[in-house]
Image (cartoon, rainbow, N blue to C red):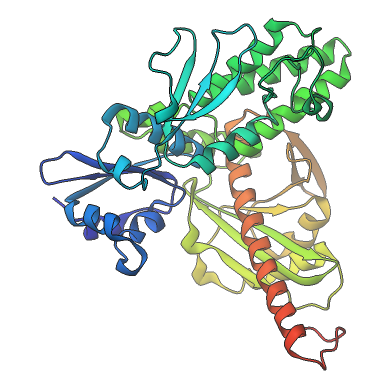
Length: 436
């Protein structure tokens, strides 16, 4: 049996749930992580933990992990496992703050969405109400609910006044249950969709939204179709993955199967073999200032953060994204020791692809436009635009790597801007025309 420190060396940089057990095999603590290796390693850094955590670590004999396809899956799976096993230290380490629960009050004609601490829960739940939790981080849960309103609008007003609330006018409460004209069935439909997402069935919701959008378009109700399309895009952008996290409970190769499906679908869509290594490049700048580039990498569908690279653009401060992308790709190609990509993805369209194709040899290159559902695929001297369904597994994997490359580029860009501000503040002779 591996020791915790031996297990730490093998942990992946992927989202998931970690489970600490004692020598008897009893579960001591369950947690979720955006990056398993980074999060779990923190427990064994003595200068970064308090006395309660140090006591927990001293009793850990084995570490088990369940990799998930997204951080949301990890959040939902963590809540499920804590509910089932009630580990001692999930209570002890909360510093007397009880976990948070989400309640959907289907016992009412117009359901409310309520968050409560365990100490505030009713002693007996109503039969029709749906309870989700416990969630260990109140901040994460409230942030999640705020994001979900952009996909499944719901009302936060406690009292139904008969008049549409403020949020109804900005699209975050539609249909509004406070409006006396609202059909209760339509509002309950939204809350059922919220229930499905919290149950790990976000793919079901995505398919429903896609079907409703197509129906509205066929009826020439283009305003409604556009609204539903925005909701679907928000769901895709927030979740990136739409799989039931309960798949992971049974163990096995759930994550590997998901990634294999994505890679297979992507290969079929592009007319290539399923790519083993995908590299995605993004540029971040404001009017050319402090411009940076990034390279994010997926290996067999999983984020390979150890392979990520960042670039400080060397060209003059001229806002030319195409030229900047060409510089970054050219510099990347001078490093064969980084490995060879099976697919290169650039954030942009025909201009970016045309600029870099001569640099990439026989490696396929595609572009992703700002309208994310469009993939630009070069075919000889011409280009083909591919629009995949927003629920397509192939689009999921492209969304995941583009989000990573954008995050990595903008993080470095902000770092350079902060350094520049410090230089300005400490140097009275600073010349804004001279690059830092």
